[in-house]
Structure formats: C-alpha cells, structure tokens
Image 1: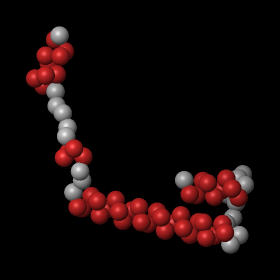
Image 2: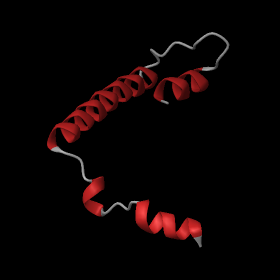
Image 3: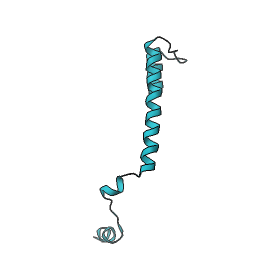
Image 4: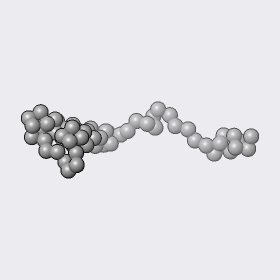
Length: 69
C-alpha cells in the first residue's frame, strides 16, 4: 500500500508522444541505416563474385555472416 501510494504521487508515465523522435534524430538514424545497407550490399556483391576473403579461423560463410552482422 505504501509503495502504491508513493508511485501514485511520485511515479511517472509515458505516452506515445514521448516515443516520437525529432527530425534531426530521424535524419541521423536514416543516414546511418543507409550507410550500413550500402556496406552490406558491397559485402553481398563481393561474396557473389567470389571476392570475399575468409577471415582467420573462419569459413567463407562464417566470414560473410560476421561481416554482415
């Protein structure tokens, strides 16, 4: 009962408006997602054309997965 009283008076809540980012944050996120998509496309292209080199101790498939991760 004490905890509920404290939360009622001192707690906080969030609404959907608190989860929406501003335009600068969305621009930043969109830019970085685009960069990562380009990097993955290059890795896929290298793998498709047999230009992907295995990393030490890994197979080609493991290297591909590690780089795409």
